[in-house]
Length: 236
Image (cartoon, rainbow, N blue to C red):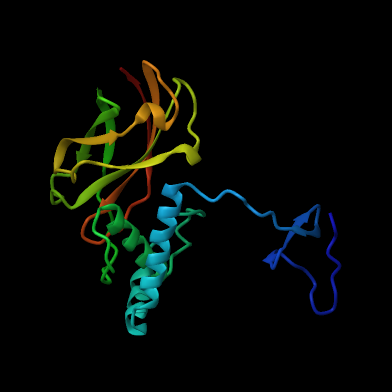
C-alpha cells in the first residue's frame, strides 16, 4: 500500500490516472494499481453500452447552437442522483442522452429534438393480479393516473427481480420490462410480461417475492421521472 508523498507542485491526489488510483485513508493519501475487469459483459449489457455509445455519437453530430439549446433546457432540471436537495442539476448532454435512451426503450430510436422538461404527473402502481402463460409471468398492476392527463402520453418501464418470499432485492439482478401499452387516464390496469421468469432468476417456486422499481417514460420527449419502488408477493 504505497503512500503518496506530496511535493511543491502536487500537494494531494485523488481519482485515477493511467493505471493508478489514488485514495485516502486515515487522512493520508495512498495509491494502488487499478484492477482490470476480465468480465466481458452479457449480451444485454453490451447492447445497452452500444445504445449509449450511439447516443454520445449523435450528440457530437449536433450543431453547436443546438447543443447550447439543450444546455439551456437542462438548467432547471434536477438531477435524479444524490444529493437530493434540489442543488444538483444536469447538463444538456445528460438531457439529450436521457431522451435518446428513452426513445430507444420505447422502440423508436432517433435523434431527439430539444424539448423543455415538464414535471411528471402524480402516478402510482399497486399489485392486483398475476397469471402464467407458458414460460412467462404476466403482472397486472392497478395504475392511478390523474383524469386531467392525456391518455397515451406516458408508459411504465419497470425494473424487476423475482426472489424467494421474504428475500430482499439485488439491484444488479433487476431487469427492465416495458408495459404492454401506454397509461390510460384515471384508474386502469398496466400489464407487464416477465418472459422466462423461472429461468431468468433460476427459481422454480409456487410463490415469489417481486421487487419493482418503476418510472414513467414520456412518449413525446423520451424523458423519465424519478423511480418509485414497489414490492409484493405473487402466488401461482
